[in-house]
Image (tube, rainbow, N blue to C red):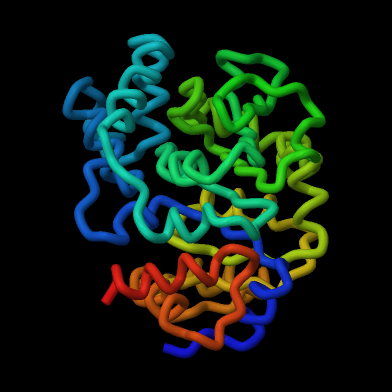
Length: 293
């Protein structure tokens, strides 16, 4: 596969924001962590009984458990699902190299954070928090070492890791139930839940969607609102055939699909000697070429 020339140029100029979904966990094959909403809800329903009609619906199942078993039960199930030991893969390592001022991570694992932790202390993360637990607050900021960070410090970081669904580390903040998302969706169109620094960094950049699908309305709404008012252009690496809704969404948002599985795409980046990587990425790419081949 040949990396599109405009994507190569955008990478070289530092004009790309990676937007990383749960599919990144499956890059090396089987992963011990839940890599899809379907995987995650199965772990819920294996421990807590929920009505049959919502057994396959993550947000509805989480809401039922929250209503009848308390929010603490939801958090315990989430913590148990994502506390399984796993190591960052080559994609996480690539993303964690210096060169990306903003990375958006839309899943609950902490493998990208682990990869960044190996780098230095020049980064931090901003996570969404549930209104059920932190009413009136949309996000919490954390330094590289997991300590809470004052609002405004994000401008000092070389890389901001933004997790709009929350994540297991450092404080087990999760948006997962219907009520969690209702609260966010009532405000997201006017951008209230999205940190000001994220809005600033996206203004002159485009997005590269990795390990994401856009089959559900929730996936599309979050992607649309997070990339809102960004400059573009945008790309999405998607191996499987697009659904009708996905094709419409990509067209509406001017996202160019790259019809390649994620592992092959990463291998192409590593193997393409002409690809001009952002600062620090070139050396990593040479190492990955050996790992992937």
